Image (cartoon, rainbow over all chains, first blue to last red; front, side):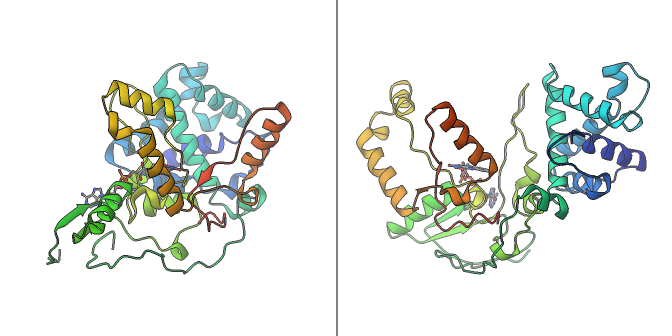
Length: 149
Length: 172
Ligand SMILES: Cc1cc2nc3c(=O)[nH]c(=O)nc-3n(C[C@H](O)[C@H](O)[C@H](O)COP(=O)(O)OP(=O)(O)OC[C@H]3O[C@@H](n4cnc5c(N)ncnc54)[C@H](O)[C@@H]3O)c2cc1C
């Protein structure tokens, strides 16, 4: 699913908004490829979830209008207002809104944890060891083809 | 699509915990078994280290499936050789006794969930899968914080038991 340019702007505004400006893990805007994460997520999802993701982007992009009564989209409000609004929507009384907010926060987290600088700062990685050891219980494969092969 | 000719006493669709267990029991009983798996065989060395890439490789529909109904719950599933056992956290709990009794009484399962037989089965599973408590060296920051918090508050707590004896905690 290709996102339009304005949707890409919205995606960046929404997903970057989940990182509280005063949070423990400061994130610079250009460190994270939020649009790539949203595209990978959409590409791998079923139709219903793809539609859900797009609906989520629209609902949250228009949140200043329906939640704050401000005739603006999320990318037009200051960063602090964006983060505060998203934090509120994560706890919204309507289950659907909370659910969509969680979905978007999940995509934001996946995007962040792809960024090497953030991984380094977060201390997430431990030394990776080349692991080529075959499974102790390897079974004979008699045939393999297609996507899973 | 290439046709594949083979013959076996049993064909098992899916290589997850259920399929693998069925295959094991059947082959131990002397039957020949073929297992069919829709997903790829994961090679540890080729696994992406970022979750987005890892999910794209091994999760069904990027983990976006949900239960039906008014309040859908996320339903994570794998699509790879080993099913979700290849991507799960390896956490192993014994069935709590109150749940066992509830199953026994409410669903009339009786002998099927007999305390002694279940306990023997759990012993065997724990032995074979080499279940051990996660060592502090593998704890992440959250677990370490939980342990410190529990100690400070005098709350009981213990490391989770997992079937990951040779796990190096490299997120692979
Ligand atoms: C992220 C995650 C973490 C988890 N953590 C834990 C944990 O720590 N401890 C724990 O006890 N449990 C955990 N679980 C749950 C546990 O892994 C599952 O309950 C268990 O693997 C289910 O086994 P299954 O055989 O029913 O299905 P699955 O493991 O899902 O296996 C089904 C397999 O069948 C294949 N398949 C489906 N349809 C077809 C078809 N038509 N043709 C060919 N192949 C097909 C699928 O690709 C899949 O490989 C976790 C699950 C997930 C997703």
